[in-house]
Length: 237
Image (tube, rainbow, N blue to C red):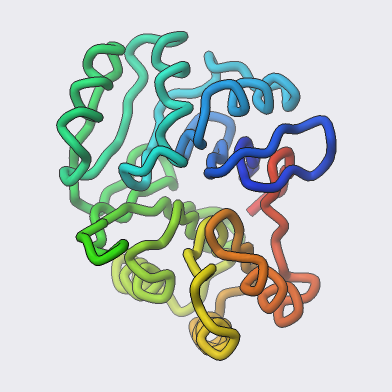
């Protein structure tokens, strides 16, 4: 299944724009998060030959602007897109989706939204001392299960434990996205890598809010199984 990274803090080359946030297209039709601004998202989509008409639904991990701001241009260009959110999203956000004529699907439960692509539903987390639940995406392919995270405010290991319990998994093919480790020490990051290995995570790709130190440690520990998830990157899971 093809993954296309549309928005990230780093770009793979000068053909693509950088921006603070994250967005990726899954299997050519499910958009996960929408980045921090519309201009960068749309420019990168155009550079990758992706049309908004290909997108059937948008899953937003959590209600932070570096993951939501590209959404409004998408809805303006294509009315009636499904937008999957958790119940804790602000009323302002929900009202805006309705104003832009998106189809708001507000659900905290774990469920399949299209064949072999599921949302985890709301998983509790804390950000700057405040409650910040979020949801992640789970993708099943012939290679195994992969998990895509927005910022992992719920804790990346906690998210994987939850997914493991949902599907009775013994291993993961890949895990990538924002791991929110930029404020963690090297020891804490190494401990998380050890937990990834213990859970048999085959490929790992920390990006966006994961921090340079985490990216370097994961890249060293995972070597050829490290996933680069810069804007413009395309890979299969």
